[in-house]
Image 1: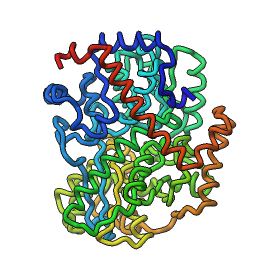
Image 2 (image 1 turned 90 degrees about the vertical axis):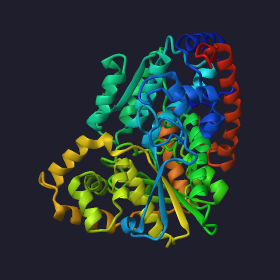
Image 3 (image 1 turned 30 degrees about the horizontal axis):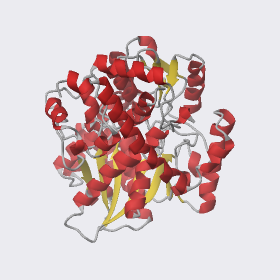
Length: 501
């Protein structure tokens, strides 16, 4: 159970003592999950010092920027998460589709650094990870390993990234600059869909006791940090944009599956506002839709398995999106020809067009699924769909070049822009959607058995317990327990005093 991040008591006091000494040495003060959910609770001294810290360096204070309330410059706080609302001229639907921007997070400019912290901090404060001795292994299909490596650098320890060899060149360029040793970047066979190969490599690494695997697909810290922090942030966003429209309804929360951590925000939004939870996957690998398999290029969403921390029985809709559409749209949104087409031929506001560079491949996947959801449920102008732009187009420059060469004969012109608009955006339909019945939920839930019980050794009773909503709600008790332990560790390390706070 400790390997799933469910401990609330100290597991190894000697390890914890060494960890506290390490935090003191490195000057690392740990934010609580409560502070990341509500950054106004961050001490004034920390916030003042942060103003002079580069958000893209491995400074311990940047841990206090691992939240959704960084301003556009990432130098201060904002009352409402920075976001983009897509107009009907772009989406073709009346519903309001709003994306919170993940590239405002520090160091990696993607929201996965929040998941990495959520997985790490329970291990730190319970004495399960010794940053002066252990290596932190971060299995990922994209940004999570970058977040883990960034936090590992802050702790002064080795962070090991495990990710498929065919991910974007920009990810590997970033990793090369941040890892302690080039051998700390491990490339597994395949691409986005090859999660089992990542598990196999982690099993090999786990045979060395000095390696600690932070498996985002089954770490409940990932679930809880998103339910409490991302969920609260999106609720704040919804309330802010509907303050002058009292008849508004939070109709749905949309997120690609990935590790399923981000989906936990939907549990919060459903409990508070009755929002439907929409999980998205690539049609090229329809695991949830059809128990299917395959490969695709929507980098960052993972698939061909059901993550252990996916609360399947609370999911309302599965939406399939094709990587051919996300590939083409990232070209449309990030080339001069494409942007001119959107402004001159489609009447989209130039400022909004400029903001589209904040949407990477998985962000476009979420956007298309939100459009399909709005069409499926016949949503109107008082209905709001919230989703995430998990990262921006900056991580995909090399992918844009590949798509232009492969799909457009190395020439993306006005005709190609029009075809892309018609084929990949205007033509978004209600195909490849499944409104989940109880039987559908059970089918998907049962599919996880083969990964977690047969392959990963989870006890059957523990696996089955996750079918009840009360199980997931009960996990929330861990958050105040962890925050109390974080506060105790901070007090014992004296890091605040060392930082002059």
